[in-house]
Image (cartoon, rainbow, N blue to C red; front, top):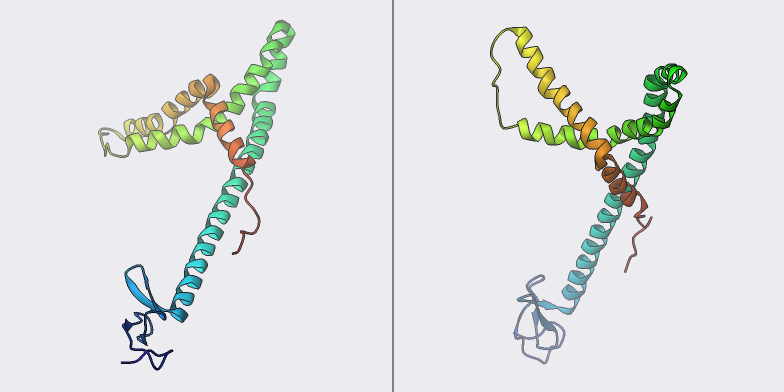
Length: 192
């Protein structure tokens, strides 16, 4: 059998892609299989295409993460302003008439509200994960069932949030989102 490219040379093997016979100068061992020059070029182009698609996917995922982090930061401030104004300002001003020094605690109150925004989601997800393998353990009257459902799905996570958030958990989650928001993804990946 003769080489498909050099008609006067004997073939040493077949291309594993196109099955053409080739001599030593026309075939190369690539990853344990013989490939001719044109199939090597095709394989290289396919590899470049896969690498480009992988970079594009990573860039899109990073851009989505950055967008979500920026949205979370913006929403935390909206939540803080709304909850602070709706729930705490009027009672605090009423107390300030009698105890004017209570206004010094207003920044701490705002911080506590702000930190609950950041801590609620991780605490609730951790709580659900903790209880996911327990199964049904509630028996008794329907009121007893409602009490336990409220206790285990809202009150305990809310208490954990109220303690963990102001003690640094809220700030930790904020810093994590802030770092994600600062890591800018390039708009278009580099194509080689």
